[in-house]
Length: 358
Image (cartoon, rainbow, N blue to C red; front, side, top):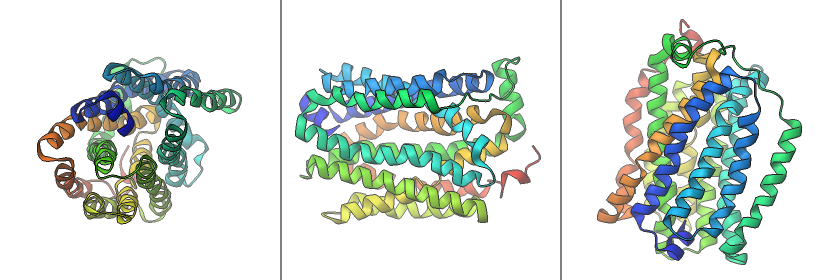
């Protein structure tokens, strides 16, 4: 994003719009894909989503302005959104007893790649330039071919004979209150993380960090989230969800504030600690929702990942506009304390989903 911002003269508001609109597609695409994945046995979404993303993301190297960047990023977002609900819905089929840890392993793949991506693309663009970026599609296309031969057919959840509204009532109706709490928690986490991941690279670019260093900062944030997600999943299978939610959201606030105020090498420590706390509960939200609504695992996964993630990121242009008025560091500094508001919602979560009368 710093390279695109410099080369194409993108404003902070435009950067926020790119991020926000791409996440809006996650908001729009994931729920209907989740519904269709529970309704039909098909590999179309699991294979088609990565194919679209593998082609669209490298095409950013051919972007000529704001609108072409928006187009390629939006297509990539739609492809990722097609993949997540049915893939997450398949996890519990193979999870066995350690369902939280298994979901954490699933999300580890995406989170670790999301962390490694900035390092790779920073090195690649620094060495070969943006014009060579389309060639990076080749490994992605090879991965799609590999997936074609190894990914099994999804089972579906037996909702083929029911309409959308009736399916939603059957799946979520008895547990809509805890599902709503989980959704708002996911919304808060998504808004904060997307704002930091979108604008902290611009801030550090202006402070003189190299492109590779900025990639390392972003990677540190997301890889820390992958590590904490595994730890949170392991602990949740043993002590329950609520203690993990309390600790993660409570400690995320000071860690995020330290990250945005840090200088020099301490930026990496701040990035790691912020990502470790801010992203720790991401797999737990999905697992908890699937346990509450086992007949609609793909649909509730889309609510936790797509609908909440998209709704939170839609607010990113607001963060960009405020940053243009008050500065990036000021706005992110205030935003870093938002996780404390989630502690009230966590109080109303059930101790374990199996305690509910589903």
